[in-house]
Length: 546
Image (cartoon, rainbow, N blue to C red; front, side, top):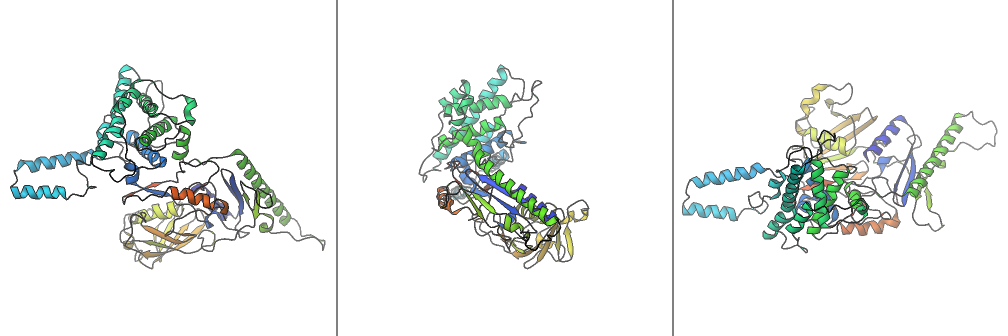
């Protein structure tokens, strides 16, 4: 999306036509974006929003393969990330437990009276179940921290890796799960998890049971998953040797890293096995973890050919417009681009005329698009708590796609980026919006955003809003206009023939999750997705119109 958005704005700024296209399985389309011809741009249509899952679902109550795969990616970050894996959602600070122990020791130095003891017991009984306590601390953090040292692979190193793998896998899939069961965490769950058998873990860590390369299309057995995890630890902690100059994993997931994908697939399948979820093959897990859209070569070839037809039409039209005016009276006038080019769909099924290709007229620009129609948008947020640096990073750059935004409030410039940017505006980054120069950003304030690198200017009307629902509005801001309405789920329109299919697939993923913090997942494909289906998360490669 970001790359297409950048190319779209660059072509608009240079007044060059853009032949935009995309495919999803058997479906595809191509269109022409032209500023001079007055057609809609890439950003006139609403793009799919990021899929959001509560953290409690990922950590405690997974119900779909995508939940366990995201959990496995966080485990990869926890085991091999910088420091102690603080960047992972699974990380828990060990110092909290030690500090709590010290507090208990200090309190035990003085013998409390009976009344004091009763008050203490009452306070413990009244503690919220989600509040940090020694009983609620996960047991796997201690196992994670017992990492073996890197070194040349030998009998001692391999044995140390075997011990580490067995300890960690047992803590994650047996001890932690049993602890949660003992605490009645799953007493209302339809399907309770089953702790992994320690004997299975021991056998998988000590015997050579790694699946061969031909098994990437079939799901591994639990004991094979244990063996794969052990093999990954063997490889990781013997990587930095004089004969192997590969870098040590930094915790960042890369779907093209074979070691990372083996770890993700094995770890997620073990968790799926524990929670009674369908296990995935390495191929399927890679598709979900890497957000890979199944591609069909024939569809790509057809759409690429349609693009070339659009190119030939544009070149022919440009050649006619650059020639001298025709002298003959009966010579037909030169046609417009909107008359020779079309928005063309590639469909899986024939239409009523027996065609697989469906051409339509090029759509007009969306009057609410701030990119090609220069429309003003409104922004709702809490101006008394938002920091200006967060607004620049989260909203202007990430959400609205500005590369080098310069911000003006009234007549006061408060931020500049680019080659000739003034460094004096850096003091404004840490300020609250309402405290910025130019009387600040308050309810009713209009700010101007200008990006010279994209030849783009935008006026934003600020609307102050102090109350937000953390469950339904975790971002705590809302954009109105610009082709989107943030109060409604953003989605890409798709052909009517597939609307029912998408609706059914979307309903399968709806769960009544507990209220908790949110984890943003970047459009993971559905676990039961096949090449002949489309879903709300499969439109990143293409946009669809009814």
